[in-house]
Image (cartoon, rainbow, N blue to C red; front, side, top):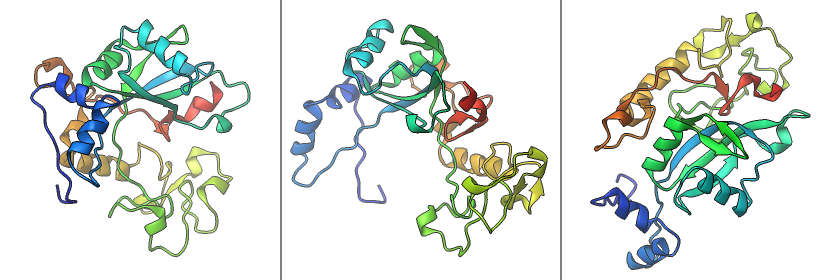
Length: 246
C-alpha cells in the first residue's frame, strides 16, 4: 500500500475469520516481526431503534444477541451506541447501535433478516462510508479535518454565517437554512444528504470505492450480495434527524 502497509488475502473467508480471533491474531502479529501491527477488517452494520435497555458493554447482553440470532459465539466483536447516551432526549427508549461482525456473512444475514436485540426485532443496514466534510468550513474538497482547515473563520453549517458555530445556530425553519456549498442557496443546510454538493461528493466516493454503493458486503460466491443501495438514510451522525423524539 502507499503508506507502507501490506494487505494479506486468504484463500477462504473461514481462514480470514479464524486469524482475526483473540489469541490467534496476537500470534500472527508476533510472527510478522517486531513493531508489526495488524488491523483486522470487521464488517460494521447499524441496528435501528434498539431498546436502550441493551448494554453493549455487557458481555452477557452481547452473548444473548449472538444466541438469539444463531451467530457463532465471538463473531459479534464490538457494539456501541452511535449517539452518546448523555445526548439522548429525556425519556428516549430506543437508539441506533453500531455493531462490528467478524465475517461478512454474519453482517449480510443481519442486514437481510434484521436482529433480535433485547427481545425486540430491529432492522439493520450497512454502515455506509460517507464523504468527509470539514466541521469548520463544511467543504468536501479537498477532504480534510477541522483541525487541518486553513479557513480563518468557522462557518455555520445550518445558515452559512461566519459569526457563530453550527451548534449555536438559532434558525429552525428549513426555509431559512442556507448552504455554504451551494452558493448560499436557501432551503437546505450543508449537513443534509439532500445537498447537491453531498451527492456529488458521494458519487466521487463510489467511483473510488465501488463497494460503498452496495447494500450488502459483496461476496464472490453470493450474487445476492451485489444489490446496490437504493435510498440513503436522511440522517445526522448516523441517526435520523427525528431520532431524538423516539
